[in-house]
Each structure stands twice: as C-alpha cells, then as structure tokens.
Length: 363
Image (cartoon, rainbow, N blue to C red; front, top):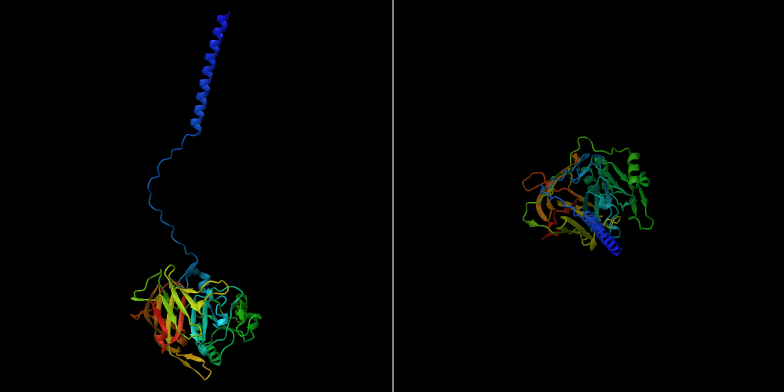
C-alpha cells in the first residue's frame, strides 16, 4: 500500500513540474511579444523639398512702396495728411501707417510733415495742421486726397491753381472729417478719423481710385538690392534747425533706418513703435522767405536739382526734375537713368540747397 502511495506521489510531482514549465514558457512568450522592439527601415536620403512658390494672386506692386498689396488697395488714391511736428505732439498718432513721409521747414525753424499712405485706418490721425503751398504741390504728385486743417493764403491759391481734391478742417466739411481733443491745447488738438475722411470724400464727391492712365511715381527693384557705392551712410543728421534736431540711424539687422527727433525716438503714439524707413531721399531745393512773416516758398513749379539716395547703409548722389502743372516728378541716378529704389517705406527731406553742409552723413 505504501508503495502505491509513493508511486502516485511521484507521478503527481512530475505532472505538476511539467505544467509549471508550460506556464512559464507561456509567460516568457508574452513578455517577448509585449516588448518586441519595433524595427523600422532607415530613412533613405532625399532631395531637400522645394518650397512652394509664394502666391500673389489678387495682389499687385504698390506704387508707393513697391511691396505686394491687394489690388483694391493699389487702385486707391492715397491720403496725404498734413501732420504737425510741434514738440508737444511730435509722436504723431497714425503716422506710422504712412508709406512716404516728407519733412520740410515752415516758419520759425519748425518743420511740418506730410504723410502719404494708401491704407490708413483708425479713429485718431493727427494732430492735423494747416497747409503750406509746397506741401499741396507734393500731395498733387501722387494723385492723393490732401487732408489738412487750415491753410495760408499761398496754399489757398495753390489748391485752386492745381485743382487739388482736399479736406480742410476750416470749411463746411470740417466737422464731418475732424474733431477736437479738448484735453489738449489748440491748435495742436485737431484729429481726423478714417470714418470721417470717408464721409468727407463722399460728401465732396471725390473719385477714390486712380485713373486708368495713372503713372507710378517711382521705380522699384523686385528684390532688396545693395547700392553700388563707396560712401557708407549709417547715421544721417538733417539740420533743419536746433528745434527738431532730426536724424536717422541704420540698423544692420533689419536693414532699416530708424528716426529720432527732439532728443529721442520718433514714434507713432497709437502703437508706440518707432518710425523706420527702407529708403531716404534728401532733395535739395531752392528755398527762401516769401514774406515778412517768415513763410517759406520753394522752386518746385518747373525745377530741377540735386540730392542723395540712401538705402542699406550706403549713399549715392542723385538729381531730380519736376513739372508741377503736369503732376510730374522723377529722380535720376548718376548715369541719368531714372532712379530704381528698394521696396519699402521712404523718408524724404526737402532741404534748402544753400545749406547742403547742414546734412551730415556718417559712416
């Protein structure tokens, strides 16, 4: 009997051992299956993919900057806004939207700015000041709608002579286009809004698009191009007077010129951003006092002269010609060919040609 029990016990142990081995084998199989590494084929070298060509469908080159803009923007007549440059309002509201900014002397050594832009927006543009006849002439070069608050008697005559479409704050259209900020001191507290400008244009019945035969004021390179010159221009000081003391400094990183005046950066008060430009033109003009009030005048009716074109840290000499009656104005390079400029915003100083030495170009 004991022998039978012993035999059964041995058989039971053998069967149990075989079952455990199978179970262990099953567990090992699961472990291998669960953690089997995923083997992937090595990536084969391929050519660098060609980036898709930039699409400009529905866009054309701006006549003011040479940059791509929507067709409907390019067809629009720009607005030429007469900005004050008095110290208390020297960081003008909305001026950063301009594509081209002109600076020229008015009476007393103060300068005034004419800011030409094709896509202004917002409800605070200014402060807007009175017209001078040479600014009216410039506005007319661009087929622009001229926006100002008041005018000299010389400007009255010029506006009439040239038939310039304009919105004047001192006329019946004034309260439609402009408003006064009563927290500020007059006359530096007149502002326009884009809604007011559009309402004024509608009341006046002005055309809002260029005529089909409109010719662009400038020629632009298709891409950013360095000037062929030996003259570096990293800082340009334009000595209109000790009042504004304006200058521009070149930034090598973005290849733009940043403007300063009144001892600090010149900013757009709406955005806080400093004004910067791709191109600078110094246009030397014959200028003199027109009367005992120190009102200025310039030879711009049928005139020519010299100047500088500055871009990408370099300067070249240029010449210019203007025929006011035909709204025609062009710049020329040293070879006599029409000047080609870099795409981007432009700053233009109309500077007395008997004071060339007061424009300083530094390396």
